[in-house]
Figure 1: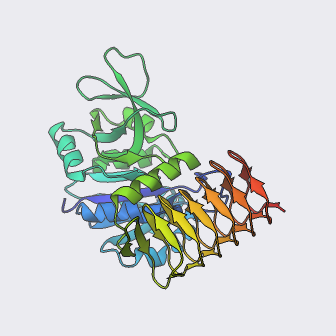
Figure 2: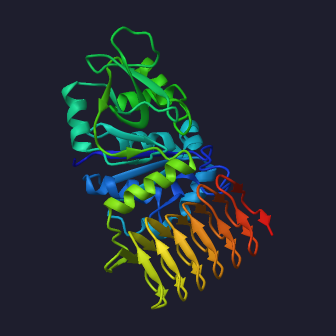
Length: 366
């Protein structure tokens, strides 16, 4: 994998998990209390990638700075370019980017990447075996992603109707030869939001699709997000938390988290850093509790996700639900199955949010 460079395109147009959050970039969504982008980069690092270049717009350029402390420990060479600077060749940005991409290996291009455990060595071997100009990583067809069609020779088509083709979904991950990438820039392909496959079908003569049984997941809806997080909690041991095993649970605790001895746990539970778990609190997994959360006396959290800085008041309950960053549940409040609380919302004392209901960001129900 030596010499394989990754080019990650991040656009601000992708608003994640509406109506739960309106400000957080998709790549900053927390999975197991760490940004989605960090999971992507750690996978690339484990696969032998040594250099990653980010292609951004003015908004994501600033948002990437908020993840600085997460990215700093990575053993990757990280670079970034503004897409408009590349198009205009401002201060030679286009020339410098193309010079970076001139390697013996093809370019690994990822557009707004999701969680994906695909083997890059197998992906690359297929690309080379096919002598492809470009290859797309295909996943099972889903309404949440653009459809592509694959014939018996693994050639890609962007429209249905070709005899012998099978529908798949475009994962947004490609291997490109350097001249094909340059052709995309010449075509003014908006790499942050355009359907790249449509441009590739015109720019490349040999366009192939790679399928794999490797685990992957799109994060487009709250339901998908919770499913991915639950799956990760069952198969991943967070390296940034201490495992405490009891007779009934595996509990990972972040640094400086304090639990009262009377608190009880069942199933897999992840507690973030600087949390306080009060007397007689009960947490039933799978559950993920973000950083700086405060669970007060008698609170019950069951099979739910809480983002950072959530306060759950005395005797309040959260059951199979989602609670956004900075939300507050006052004493005796109840959140029922499939209910959703947006960022910085407030659910008042003894108020119930019934199944399937949504309390949007910055809203109050008191």
